[in-house]
Amino acid sequence: QVELVESGGGLVQAGGSLRLSCSASGRTADTYTMGWFRQAPGEQREFVAAIWRIGGRPYYGDSVKGRFTMSRDSADNRVYLQLNSLKPEDTAVYYCAASLSSDRVIATASYAYWGQGTQVTVSS
Image (tube, rainbow, N blue to C red):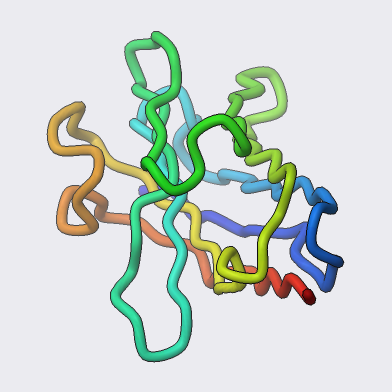
């Protein structure tokens, strides 16, 4: 079992940057494939990025590719999401999630553990 806590959200102007953090307690984050998702009001939860438990490069959703960067700090048991060149359409609650599987990382159903979310608001 793992508990996830996100932080780092806030209000930022378009073109700005934020760094989201997700801390994992319990089993180490290296045990899991870690993902970031986001959900805007009235919308379905959308895949943002994932990093596999077995290593390798992060994988990104098309809407954030080239602007967002996901990383893992094994020593600190955290994953991060660097958000650059933010747009108003990036406004959403951002969730960190953990999966014991390495398959279908873009699907919410693949993740057994979720944080409470952190709000990101981008003003135009």
